[in-house]
Image (cartoon, rainbow, N blue to C red; front, side):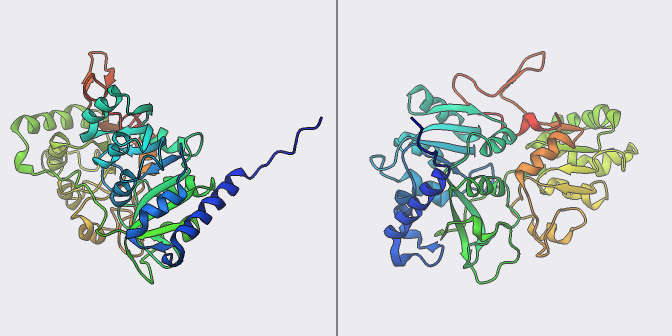
Length: 385
C-alpha cells in the first residue's frame, strides 16, 4: 500500500493554532500586536505547549525580566516540562521555573550568581541539563537542533507595527528572534515603551508576533564598571607585567578583556605606562569589548582606535554618542551591539583574551563546574581561540 502523503507544513499549522488561541483568549485586548501587561499570563497559556523549547533572553546584562517573572508564575498544571534555552542565568526567576515545575530541561552558557542554585536543583532532580555551551555554540544551535518554539525577548521600544528599537543593548536579540521567527515559532517582546516613530529599526515587525509594555524598564546589569580606587597595588604590578611581558612581546593589537579589576588596571595603564614604553600604535588598538569607564583614558589619548561591543554599559550612552569614530553607532547616535557577532569577532579576529575560571591545572585545563557550583563557560572559550 502507498503511504499517505507527507505533510510538510506542520510547524506552520501549529503556529497558526497558537495564534488562534491567543486571539481567542485576548480578544479586544489585542491592539494590533500589543497587549496590556496585565494579560501576559493569558497570552503565555495560549501560545505555550507542553515540552516546548522556550528561549528567554537573559544574558549577563539585558534581561527580559518581566516575561521571565510571568513565565515563572504560570500554573505548572497547565504549562510544564518546558525546555529552557538561556545564554545566562542571572535572575532568580530563571531558576524559579524549575523549582515550580514549569520547566524541566535547560541548555545554557553561564550561570554566574545562580551557579550554586543550579547545582542544588540538579542534585534534587528538578533540573536536567542538556548541555553547557559557549555563547557561539548555543546561538548556532538555535539554528540547528535547539530552535525555540517560543522566544521571550526585550527591546527598548516598539512601534504600532511591531518594529523594534533595541538601542545600545541589542545583545542576543537578533539571533534569538531570527531563529524563532523563521522556523515558524512565536516571538513575544517586552518593551519599555510603545511609540509612533522609532529612532531606527533594529528588528523588523514582521518577525514579531506580540509586544507588551512592561510595568518598568527591563533590568540591565552594570557589568564592567569598576572603581579605580579598589584596584590593588598587586593588580597594578600584574598589569605592568602583562603589558611589558605579553602585550609588548607579542604586539597584541586586537583583543578582548574579561571583567574585573585586573583588566581595568591594564586599561588604565595604557595611556601612561604603556605610552612610556613606546607602545602607542603598537598594542591595544582594536577591541571586542563593552564600553566602560576604565577604557576612556586610553580612548582619549588615542591609544584605542575602535571598539565593537557585545552589549552596552549603563552611564556610557552620552560618551558613545560623542565618539562615533570609535564605536559602532546608528544614525540616531546610539551604539549597535550584537553578542553573536562580537563573539565571532573575539573568536576569529582577536590576538588575545584575558579571562578567569573556577579552577585550572598546571597544563592549562580549565573547569567551570564543581561539586557545589555549575557556572558554565560563557563566551570565554571563544575569545582569542
